[in-house]
Amino acid sequence: MRKSILLLLNIAPLFVFSQTETKTKGELVIHGSIANFKEPLDYVYLVCLDGSKDGFDSAKVINDKYRFNIQTEVTTLITLYARKADSPDRFKNRFMLTAIVEPTTVMISSTDSFSNAKVSGSMAYIEYKLLEARAEKYRQELSMLYRGYSKMKQIDDKAGMAIFQQKIDSNLETMYVNVYYKYIKTNPSSILINYALNQYVYSLKDTTSEQSVKEVASMYSKLSGNDQNSYFGREIKKKIDTYKIRIGMMAPEIVQTDFLGKPVSLTSLKGKYVLLDFWASWCGPCRRDFPQVKELYKEYNKYGFEIIGISKDTDTTAYLKAIEKDGINLWANTLFNEQIMKSYFVAAIPVKILIDPKGLIMGIWRGGNDENFNALRSMIENNIKKQSNFQQ
Image (cartoon, rainbow, N blue to C red; front, side, top):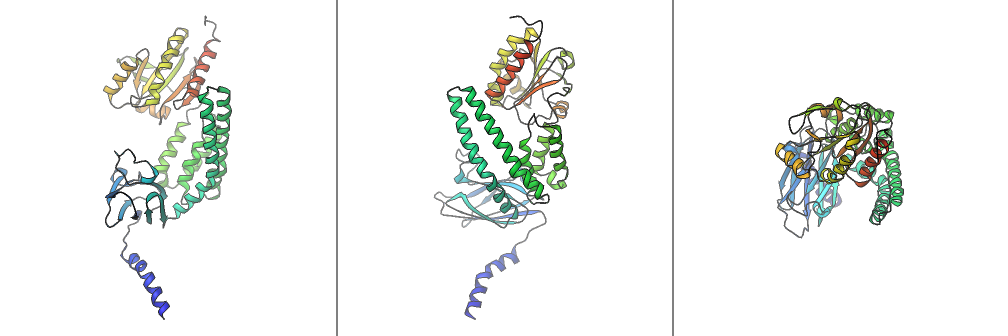
């Protein structure tokens, strides 16, 4: 009898909690608790791009506890911070926790640090941890390969860099297939499906076959409407759209005015090599490339090489100042508009697209790094030198 009473006393708090907890359909409720934090913690801050309040919220910590109520219909990414957005150490593990959870009641308990938080109540989180555990061995290998690549770069060993890059690409492709692709194929109705597909879509490259791109698009089409409209779904759609622009296809027309008000069009440049350079005044990697791009332009413009800069700026003043400061008024610069967006699907920048004299896309480079720029330079040099009118 005494054991029965003790058992009832132990489960009573859980019973009371289940009776008093109110949760609407599609709502994610987070109950958090903290213990033994060295510094006082007055608020916990949250980012959930599928939630209300523009994806950002905060909760006051009272008696070492906090709570969030987020209206979302999907499995989503949440990030909790024990520091304000303007704090320099905000992104240190000690003050940050990232989790994948579905709309349910989730318990998060933290001792000393957010990095060792225990998350319970979410099936999506359990699946997420199991899936990422399968990817861990590949990530460890990648970490070693990236360190090797960095060492080769420090001593300017291009051959060594190329070997490590090949191994990195191979490792990534194997991880995407063996972990995320297999998971999607064997768990098509998983509560984690939108996250898994978002991870797998990173396997797409400019050299990926059209059939593979169509397969990913088909996987996306089978997601529920809510999942397609979720943060992960929106990211998947962006990436799929990005690869609708492919090497070998005819470059979509661009009709716009440049920063001086003069008309700009691809058709008018037929018969020349044209580089489309997608950039913005706020994009550091984009602007770091400009000195080398100017060298290319000065060297090859007289042999039929042109550039159209396409800025994603919304601040016209910053856009014009960047053109003047960086000296890129040598060529036409225009602003990204809806027509260009629908034609080229450029999301992240920098992106450089090289078009041949017939109007066909020759090369696409995403991201700002020496390898991409060297490949671009090599393609321009090798092709322009083939022209009969090239003179040393």
